[in-house]
Length: 188
Image (cartoon, rainbow, N blue to C red; front, side):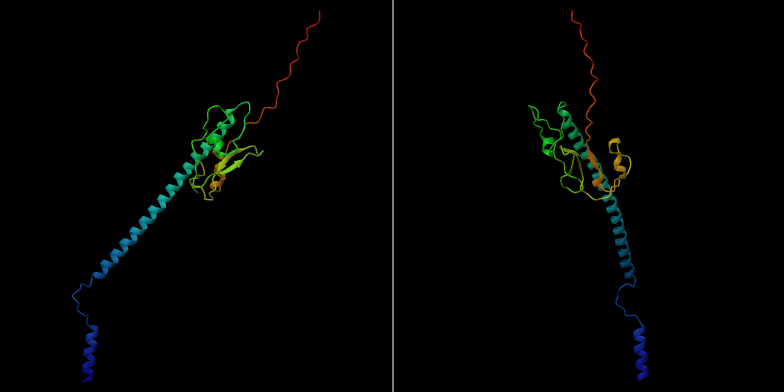
């Protein structure tokens, strides 16, 4: 009798329990999981592409703003041809009081598009003022070629901080015109 009970118990364990549910419900669950994984991979690829586009747009903005600073410093320097000098601060570029009317060489003090902070100032070698600006970002640039002639040195830059927008004043003319002797008029 014990063997009969044991056989029935073994058959009961081997037979599937009837719950009324379909046996294919696991496949739907797997399909949904794979669909979520594919959507996640697509969103990750789109996010990478979006961040690359944002970084390239910031590079373009940095090149524009840096050139604005360079042009403003040149404009400030060339305003007084008899006494050219470099600005002492960014405020000098915003409001130049050397003339009876205020001259604005720069519309506003731009912020660095990568750090959101003010640009670092580059002082002239002779410490007579500001000769340029540069970013403080240590990021690696995407753009490595195709720069304008004035920015061609940026091709070797390792970081955005190496993109230095500098106005180089022309060398002063030390050459004096040759002194022409004044004709002497013989005394009568």
